[in-house]
Length: 319
Image 1 (tube, rainbow, N blue to C red):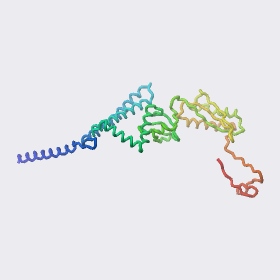
Image 2 (image 1 turned 60 degrees about the horizontal axis):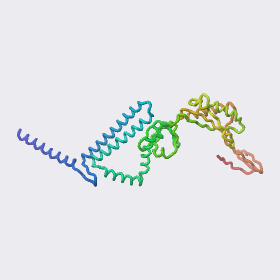
Image 3 (image 1 turned 180 degrees about the vertical axis):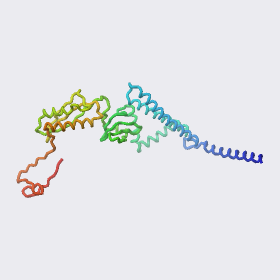
Image 4 (image 1 turned 90 degrees about the horizontal axis):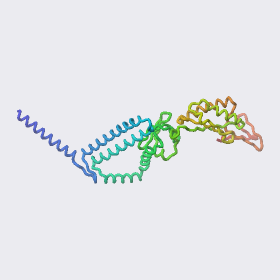
């Protein structure tokens, strides 16, 4: 019985050895498609290489950003740019190594792939390619940096991240707006954090045509006194722009070192202008229309309708 059991065990081991040999043969067998060749094991190895490169890129990127951020003399946006470029470089190398290990990709095959991609870009991927190229322009040229306050179109917010294809900005309502990178390069935008930290804000205001312009000027200057984030040097200034159709048009100019708060600063000044104008008896006019009748008479009937010589007149509002 012992000898029979030993023989059975050896036979079982031998059958498993044959099974595992066949499995390994299919896993390691090289398949060839065109100029590419690889096996299941090589594909698995390539996937592992890519996963390691992806993990390594994120780890090294965050490590570099933390180390560079400790250097106070460097621009805060530099550590983000270096971190992103490092991440993209490691991922690119990881993809090339994974393809070389997985399917035996060489430089000739890479040229063929890029040729195919260029044809695809010409047929419909040009927008994606433009976004990616614009992403690198933003990282190298840095007209917009992480943390900047920007206005583009009707949206305004703080830049949270500059990715390969899109940029994420957060508005005052804590809403994330996804903007294609090409839009930041192609369209006009306002960067409230770029260059000189000071910015001039213009607040237009119209007053009644019979107002005292000297009193209006003095009142507007008083409205800027004591307002948070408004600089006293350069001093606020009032400009008399023009004689409007129904108003005298002025412009109040103030300087601030917190341009990202321009909406709140305008609001604070407008509150003070309204209160001071009311105290000084300065009227803010509204659009008026003057109607002249060459013949006949005009009156209002019992139903509040305009009547000219007994004929009802339809009133029309014009902006």
